Amino acid sequence: MRRIGGGFPQARAVFVQGWRLASPDHTRHRSDMTETYRPRRSVLYVPASNDKALAKIAQLACDAVIIDLEDAVAPADKIAAREKLAGIFANRPDANGRRREMVVRVNALSSEWGTDDLAAVAKAEPDGILLPKVHTPRDVLEVGDVLDDNSAPDSVKLWAMIETPKAMLNIGAIAELGRDPASRLDCFIAGTNDLIKDTGVLATPDRAYLLPWLMQMLLAARAGGIDMLDGVFNEFRDPDAFARECTQAAAMGFDGKTLIHPSQVEAANRAFAPSAQALAEARAVKDAFALAQNSGKGVIALNGRMVERLHLAQAEKLLAKAAAIGA
Ligand SMILES: CC(C)(COP(=O)(O)OP(=O)(O)OC[C@H]1O[C@@H](n2cnc3c(N)ncnc32)[C@H](O)[C@@H]1OP(=O)(O)O)[C@@H](O)C(=O)NCCC(=O)NCCSC(=O)C[C@H](O)C(=O)O
Ligand SMILES: [Mg+2]
Image (cartoon, rainbow, N blue to C red; front, side, top):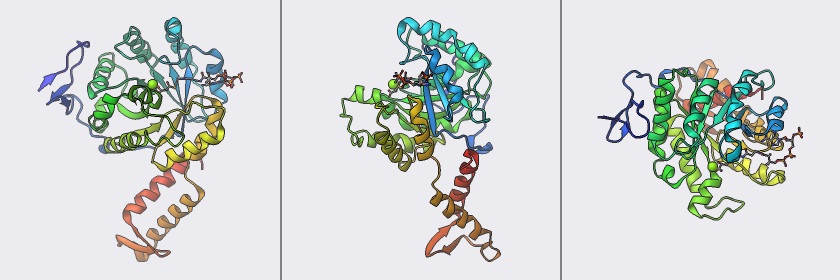
């Protein structure tokens, strides 16, 4: 066993063969905790340097926002953007009466801004901190340890951008951290622009060359029990193509999509909400298992289809999701 070292002397995670199993003072397992559904159908990036865009948040129906300090903010504006965080979080805009999830994307810790970003963000106590250019589990653990050392509440989660070839090679190990609440890891976001840049694959409308990696991310996220959000769609003036990409991502199992423009919110909310047909089927499964004659059964026939209790669990999850988003 060893402790991690390197750039963060405060880091105190316990490692076995390179990957942390658990920190000594945190032994809870995610499956021991009550799961609550948090909608993340539409997650809008808002540059922290853009006052007009920040003011717009209150009018938008996106499930979550990511206040960006990284790629959307020019180097000359980085410090001023960071200094706005306290004010932004002092007046958190709700979403339709519901508390909207608010996350901050910091600059990479290896950059000249990363460490100070993290200190400022920890003070603002957002719902999450999005880490760009995560390569290994260690990148997540180091930040978690810094947050612990600064007594950041457990409610501050970590989100990771999966956007480098190295992250793809380590994806299972990074996702596995989601099984340990002490790691704070809660969500992956596909960084498709950076992946395209770093790999050289051709960006095609059907995303043919990205799909294997996107599915691998999705699978890893599910293994780690965390959410998986699709990357952004750059052509924000093309609503039809955007809707097609949302439909594709929903079919692939993504929980939602990251967005760059307010015009994308409504289509994402629609695409990642359960369809009327799926809801009707879920209600039928629930009702069928509620019948006295089916109470002790593991499998039943419903409208010519085999239905097992795993389908009941799936149906209940879908209905809970619909209730949470008011569908
Ligand atoms: C893409 C934009 C630069 C377009 O800006 P603009 O042409 O000014 O848009 P509009 O004039 O159509 O804007 C209309 C109104 O909407 C507000 N607005 C625009 N964008 C946002 C936003 N993101 N959040 C909130 N409000 C927004 C405008 O202020 C206008 O308001 P009003 O006049 O009052 O009606 C711009 O949309 C933009 O900057 N988008 C965000 C870009 C961003 O954050 N990029 C970084 C994240 S994506 C990424 O990093 C990729 C990832 O890492 C990867 O590797 O793939
Ligand atoms: Mg990126």
